[in-house]
Image (cartoon, rainbow, N blue to C red):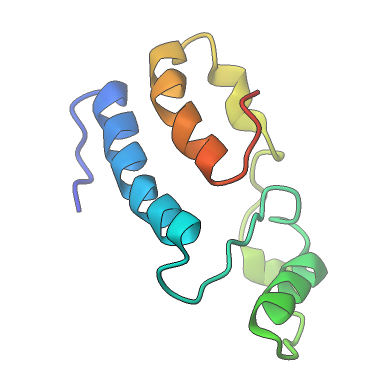
Length: 104
């Protein structure tokens, strides 16, 4: 797995290629799976537990809030970089849409 990327474009191409495999699996239903969109619940331990429980059809204990680590950016914060990384966003938009995210 490449961790040293030569440019933001190289990172976007790598991410698009990687996520394309996930989208193929999802679109063609190649293997039993669930897509969990955590954007709006990433800081909500109860929401995370419920999403996992629903996906796996099991009961999941709610972890203590401190188990999530330090505070993170709010959901959608990455959109603030649209102007600076427009070409990279353009590379990733089709794959995001394949995974059920809106273009904007």
